[in-house]
Length: 358
Image 1 (cartoon, rainbow, N blue to C red):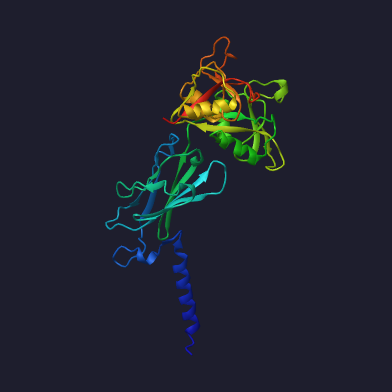
Image 2 (image 1 turned 180 degrees about the vertical axis):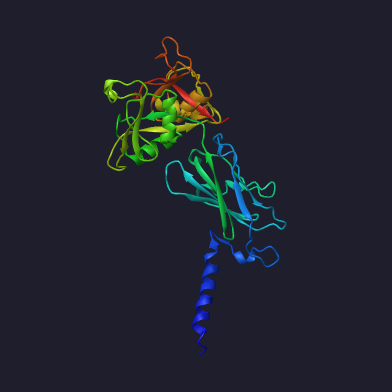
């Protein structure tokens, strides 16, 4: 047996291992196939550049958004190179980064809740901007655009943030009854998502003042105070977002701060000849061609569409509320907001707010 046989076997195994490792997300990628036509696999003195400008995007929920990204070489190459492009997403909840899309040339594959909703623009050479269709509340966060060419690997980041409104929420059972999972479900049922600290902080800067502590997306429990007072941490503490820190997501119970974004369609007070109990209110909205509005839809309509009505009406969670953008006598406090009468008996007769996507 040839004394060099073991060495040859080792080299063969190493080569096969390199080929097998080049399979990623179903895309074959091998450096040796990415030459410049002259047998050169890597270029000396050539730098790969990746840029995302502007580094942020503010889309409308339900619409499309383009996250900019482009790449080029310095100095410019005379022969195009085949590169691998990957877009990844770090959600605002702080969960781990996950793949959005992987592409080589015009072949691409999308993943997770982005599947069949994302593609590359590729209008001009080097353009690898990501287009996301039907933007949802879940899509917020930081996106990383990565270009891989042989040993070169460069990336750039784009932040996607939806315009929205933060509102405190507690269920009909009253204050401090929700685990983290229950809080997440409660926000989703109200056409909203659990707010992040950044969203709560922005809402506090805009004047949100609420004494009950609520869950945030990172598992912490906090509350915003603009007017310090004794029942809310005492007079010795200045205004700010007060924090209980991270709480146990299963055993601890609090309220929640929800985040709702701009909505397509409209929320309206149903003109009806008579007052309605809750089940009648639900049916009346359906008969009118819509559905009973959620709390999140009312807050979004109040904030972004100027919904203003002094009549209390049923919402989908069984609560009774009304929106005021122009405070006036007999319509509650002298500040704008969504007023709440809590959760009356479902047999009581009231008006109703409906939502229509048209």
